[in-house]
Image (cartoon, rainbow, N blue to C red; front, side, top):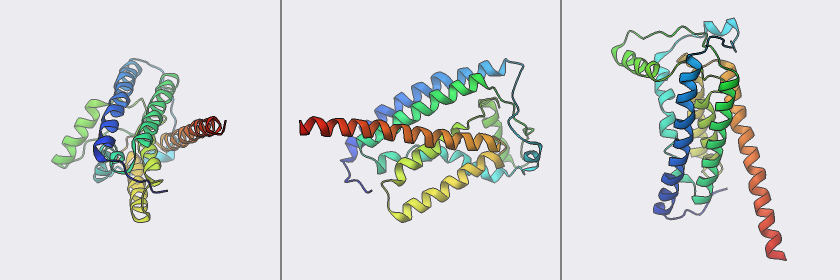
Length: 217
């Protein structure tokens, strides 16, 4: 369903306001849990040996990093109410993911390696310096991207919708081909996103029904 667009300034104000809250929850949880988990000694291995044969393809890092562009898209497609809902979904995904990270600290099966190319070497050095490979299941990279694209495709034209889904597919694949995640991480990240979307759908449906009943009475 295509929305009638609100003025961009109104959407931008809502987007910036709620983005701050999403950032508060992410930066308040993910880095701390990442550091804490790195001090632990017992980890779960949520992968099968066959996955370790998946090739390392450095060029996919561009898809991997494009998640940050995905975060910039909602303000161009969604109105204020949809932006608020998306923020609640992202915060929910962050909190649930953080709880799982604490309960099930994981160990990356891939041996981290630096590409020979100078530009890719610098990029991966930076990625490795930011992140200990333990906050894996679910992949927040996947969960965030799927959540945002799900919100946008509901209010976009067919051509844009297909383009976003192709982009999302490349982004999801990049988490494996850059050896940042395993297959179960991807699956659980997508499931977390879909579950949160359905949960929020029910919440908004109840609010809509309550408002309709109030008007009728």
